[in-house]
Image 1 (cartoon, rainbow, N blue to C red):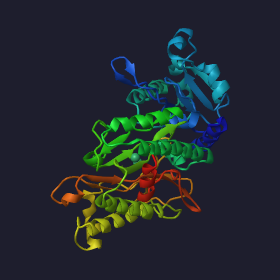
Image 2: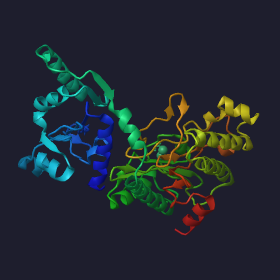
Image 3: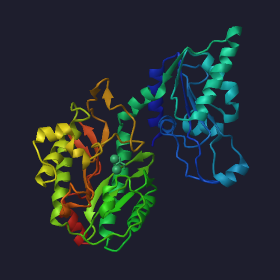
Length: 434
Ligand code: GLY
Ligand code: MN
Ligand code: MN
């Protein structure tokens, strides 16, 4: 992403902080997978959003109208030996030259410098509770200032939740962000297409996962969450990630897999027949979910509220379950009682952005938030008919979810993942041609 994009975000933040405010953000910690093996490092989303700086052991500080610089980065110093093992470090000089910091310091010096900056401000913006170790350091710095209060040292008298301010900013995507998200959607759509073309009865779920990893890494993307690849009954397990079972002729396979590229995520689900042909029962369930998804996507318009797409999906799914003979009774009562929840137990979507379940409030006060241009959400209704006495035998173990990523625009819903087939005939055609 262009450095100007990060600069623009910082400017917007500075305006909200005002000259009496200071914002402090730590980088994400390095996380251990097991013993001395670490996970691939992923920067904290808020930190990255404002800095574009992807190194651990860093702290970003924003102090509007500070005469010697508003944007400060504390980071690791250059270290020839460590860089041989772990790779390049920007160092404080690089933080200024390449990341637009006005001032940068070695991370070791933070105890000497940061309390002095806090002392000059009355409001500290900080996200409490994300990193316990860093919370404790903030407390220590405040305590050290208070101790010196008798000597006339000023302590900030207001602590403000930074996430509240920042997450509202992150909810409205810029053009650059939308283009990154289109790319993430395009890469994931190509991977789903590849999986549809590759699947054969007798394969294992992980063999399809391998197709996703292949397609993602070719584009320098990584999975934005553990891919869910569930054949047959496994398609009814919402967070199934074992991906180890055999894919059986006659079953459906549900794949929920998206990628992250340049820190932006996609999140896409498709469900298709292992054999390439839907059975009549599978098709009947699939068509209800698809109709629900179309109805929900149609509600993704400025001025509608957050829950309108969900309400539309619930209505179509409840009607559909009635038609299949799985629910019976009057539609309004079934909806009011939440009878569908046994078979559609999750929400119809969530915000999407740097995080898969992206930040931003869904309600303003007691009311659902109104949709506005620039917001991006998923639309992902599903029906899960796990084996139970309530489900007629012919429908058992059919799990269907269809998920796309949708941008709110003044001209209506813009489906970022639209390159990927989802009409049953199109799926069958694609699979037959493979
Ligand atoms: N893949 C997680 C979700 O769909 O929310
Ligand atoms: Mn998903
Ligand atoms: Mn999702």
